[in-house]
Image 1 (cartoon, rainbow, N blue to C red):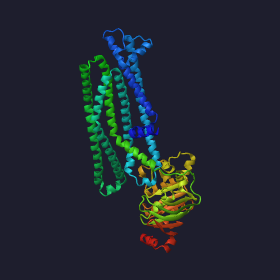
Image 2: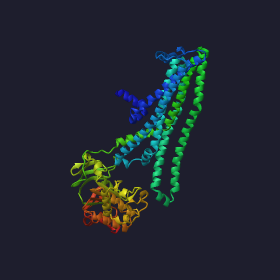
Image 3: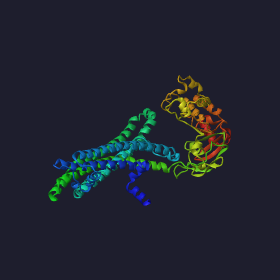
Image 4: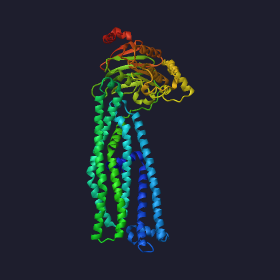
Length: 599
């Protein structure tokens, strides 16, 4: 069984991928295609006895049906008289049943396609949600965006084309077998001609597949540039770089367009030459059969019917296969992307804890994103519950990285991080993170109402409403919300465009307080605000002292005077710690920083 699996994965890699998502549904779809081909073939075979009767006979015989004579013999066995009326009725039954089977096949394909798209999107969302944060910050954002949006549609098209090719392949197989049963010699000659024609197109298939990969890579670049243009729109507009950056995006668009043109050329060659190739093969074989082997034209016509069907199915199979190759680059990218996400999943322990009771400890912790230069080195630190800690230092000293280590977003390369003496590796981080509030310099505001932004789409029950207003009160933004015409139902717009920076920051603080957090992280949370707004928000934060464990990453040193402990970082190491006034008295570097800011 293991050998068979390895062979399938090696030689049927695409089938293996689709089967991993669809399982038994694949075989049901192929079985329906097989039934359509058989019913069509049996219906066509019954035309030969019909022609015998039209040509002067009163009843049909099985002599000229070759290997398909069992059809007429079965009807004889059932006591059905092969009169003209009965033969017409049998043909009608075959084709009506074929129509029913074709409907089932077509609609089932729709159901399977929709299931495949939904499962693919669900899997991507679930896997991305558990993707290692450490790996995420180093990942190509353009690839992530392109794969999760545009590539899903292309993979869906690849699925449709792949299984259409397989289903037409089943029809080719059925018609070739029926033709072989009717006239083996004719079947062998036409099959050989069809094989030669397919061999001639292999070079085009290879070019199509290579070009498809280029389109996928171009899509990654385009999406990455587009993300940056939206994110840096204000800067590009203000500095006059919009045109130059637009040229970079246009080059990426031109690259994708040229690749699509190449694929269009290959497709056009295939479409233009398929039918002439089929006709030349069939005409040549008929000429050889009649002039060199003296075959009866009736048997040839029946075999020709089957082979005309099979060659048409072959054309369709090859066309769909080429369409599949058009999108194969996206399928390869999706497979590789999901594999990367699976490999780099966040390790999660089983122990469920609700926040922490006493301490979070770092014991001889070092960290690096890549196995080169360490960002943090040999850190020993204890965070006590409901105390306020401020992390200061020059840019690049490791302040934010240290906070991310404390709350479990990043794993230590060396050393241990313990929550109440339990290593992070044993803790269920998803459950633990629900008790962490994170407020950044650029507050996260969703394009939704104030209520949904704060409650994270909780139901508007009386309990949740009371909790909502309490969170607004703690964040000192109740009066502003009450002054709005629609109060808590007011829409904030894209990234909070309808409110000021200070209001956005207070709404984001209210969201974290609504969660019943244990730890509140303020990562440069007020550095982008004017002095007055910063002072007000700083006052709000200080009122929360003692209720939460507050971790402040600060650039403006005036905001950390009331912290229980200030940790000074320098080149990834702790170079000083104590209260604000203790550091002023004992740390020359801290004193110099304060003097430079004229605090």
